[in-house]
Image 1 (cartoon, one colour):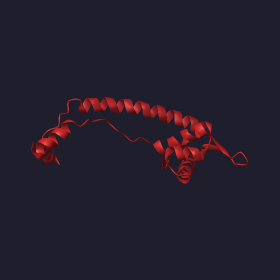
Image 2 (cartoon, one colour):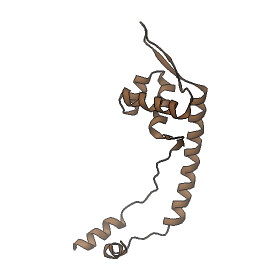
Image 3 (tube, rainbow, N blue to C red):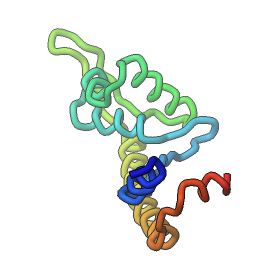
Image 4 (cartoon, rainbow, N blue to C red):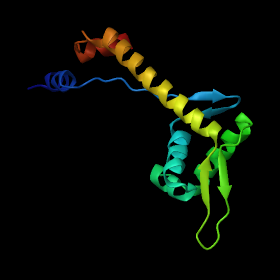
Length: 137
């Protein structure tokens, strides 16, 4: 088997699927997957520290994301209670809960549309000779 045949066979066996990064601009800032994961984690754990850990980011990064969202939107996103013997806690405001619900719904709908468009444009895609593809570029 020559090099071109092996390349063509590996491309033929390649599975194509759509992907997207989705965010909502809020003035100069954005609301996207990172802040969404942080807020969802806070909603579940009542802790910014645990939410950041679950989202795979530092506490400082999660704090900055939320602080920036609050500044960009002009809306408070968290009700914070300073710790004591039992520790502090954070809860989402009604605005944050509403924003999360709308973003999740928007992302689900966008995913459906992206899948439909992908199917329309790639359903009959058959990889060609790699040299032909390079000639297009």
